[in-house]
Image (cartoon, rainbow, N blue to C red; front, side, top):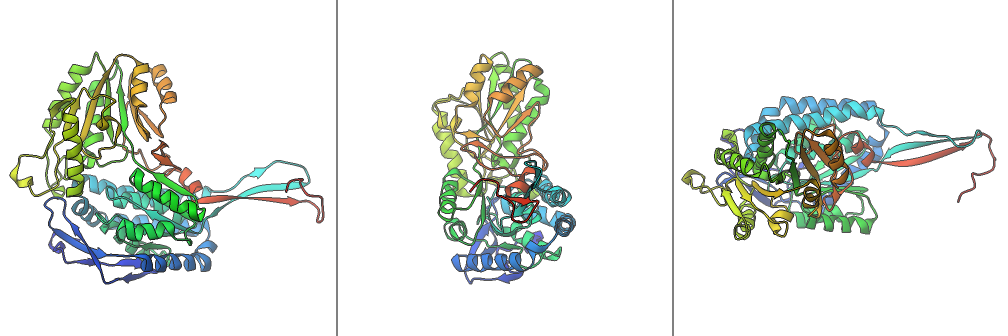
Length: 494
């Protein structure tokens, strides 16, 4: 999609069984930079979801389950090459659709390709194990795909999260039905088209855009789904899990975070501060593992707050395609939600910089919130414990490591954390005490690399995505026990 094509009237159909399907109703997609019409996408409901699940089941039973790991690996690598060939176009579409800076969107396009490269490279190593029991019994396990997997993904990283969840599922031998968020569905729809171009059979990957309460709910509740993956809010995640429970199918849930940085007295401030700023301003803070809280030792507190205030004040806001430091939020609804958090917080802490919408008239029509630094935030404040999902960093001083751990744990989330110290012994202790899925010591990377397992503790979710572990998430274990002699005695268990 080029700039000239973004007229707001371009229509994007669902991808079902290798065909473009137009239900007859459409959802308007808007440009977060100014709220102008960007495109229209198919409004899928239960009938389209039913068709997609049926197509996935047919492809799985007649073809995909009989493929070898090598064949699936070759297709994954072919799709990675196709994604790279389309990388710039995908990045521009992602930037337009989400508002994120173009450089970040380019990274997303490359990471999406990396997922398919990675799983294409490691799936042939996926296997069971031999179980040593008795000399007359050969026992081993098999890893087998579930069958048809449903994937409901968010609007903040549509291309990257789509690849993150679909790549291991396809590589492991499942067929997929993907439901992108209605706010940012364009690159997942293109992914469905490119999978066909790369050689995946029709029905292996189906993409059904639509509203969560319509297409999403129908997919989560469909009895033909064997495994569900959801990334999004905790409230919707609870509904997805309840729907899966009624059908007795497993779920992988990634439900956000309120991730802390812990800066100890011996921290390398010059190294830490740029990464701390980036961790909360990348994609305007709309990142599940954004470093949204800074717990800083009292000896460093004044110096760090002053330096962060300068850094936040120097950030450039603008249209994603112009590659600013910070783009707009995804929607007016999300902008207003973040501003509501800031109004509530301002009464009980210091707003060092930001705190509202930008004064620049050129940005007035867009969904912008100023990068905001809040100091002296109490763990009793909602902005300390709840996910804001905007460019808002909360600073809280502490006096000792025990207090720092208590502050870090004073939330129901447990997705990621950063530790800044030169003391390896202290770092090891904190790694053990923090109940989070990822810990970064003297670095911070939102969700880490493709190879690093990614999952949440507490109410940040269940299951693991990314890394080799994700292949296990998308397979189930079958135990086989073969007696050495036909008619031999059993192994004594029911």
